[in-house]
Length: 151
Image (cartoon, rainbow, N blue to C red; front, side, top):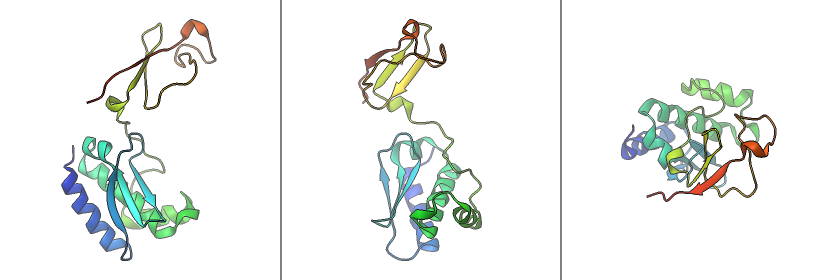
C-alpha cells in the first residue's frame, strides 16, 4: 500500500521531468480506473482509492502511462506513438489497467441464487441474471441487489 503524500511527490517530480510547465497532478475519486489525463486542464489524476490500495511501483507505472498520454496528445489514444513514448519513459505495463477495482467501496451488492456476488458503483436500473450461471438472461439466475452503507 502506498502513502498518498509520497505518490504525490513522485508524480510532481515525474511531471516536472517529462512534461512542459503548466501540467499539474491531483487525486480523483475514481473506483475502477487507476489514472486519467485531462488534456484541457493540463492535469494528470490518479484514483485516491486505488493509489492507496496499490504498491509504489504500480502507482509509478500508472503515472508513466498517463505522462505518455500527455506527451503524445489525446488523438493518439493507445496507438503506436503512445506505446513508443510510454516505453521510452520506462513504462512496462499494458494498454489497460489490470488491477482490481476498489470493490469494497461499491454501495450495491448483488447475489444470485447460487451465491455469486456482484458489485456495482451505480444503482442497477434493470433486472440482471448471473453471467457465471447462465450465458443469456435467465430469471432462474436473477440477481437480488442490496444497498450497503460505505463509511
